[in-house]
Image (tube, rainbow, N blue to C red):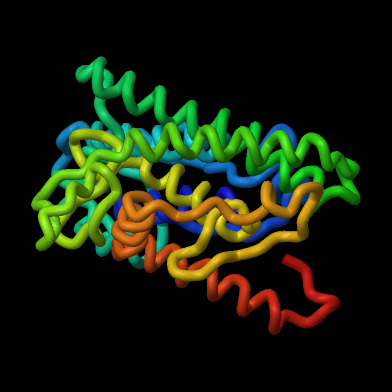
Length: 293
């Protein structure tokens, strides 16, 4: 699930990449991640020092290195693009990807605030760590460990119930962090108070616009909708009840959050990443039983 965050980020910035499908704890995963987890980013790059062409940069590639943790991977990618770091790749699409990267540089460089803007970078870092600790690891991952993967980690209904409470509280904090810019709706309803449908407005977590922290938060909201902790857009997704049924009903989707999710998911990069995931799922369904990844 978490690799989707990095695929979305890679599609946003337009750098060439190779997506290797592997299961956690597999030989492939263990070859790049110390705990055999996914995702992990294997990087090979060179710094463009103004050479006229790529041949003049030959021999300047760094030794391959690995970046782990999905949030750290996205931060690295955003910093790399902003600093004009070129990722080496031998695919035929490299030139096309690089041209896309150059054309979109001004817009994608805002995905990660630079360290030279300490207040904005601190805001970004704070929100990223809040999402990763309060929503991901202390909430959604607890559910996955002790519900979906209970055969591995064991059942812990009390921990899952507490994780759900934690999620509800942390989600309210993040909703308050959503910034709305643009015009009010035709009824002059204040969208900052959750009114209206959000048409003509922009929703983001940083004052500079859409950023990598939006990718993390949207993904976590999708995760919560999938397991029935948060209403889907227009439909409620239910999950097997554990304890009081009222407490396990999906959290209502506030209009402000609904408009925010709709806008972020309308981005072309999100659509491309979603299509890649769909193709992967379809391929898995049609793969022979005795085949290997």
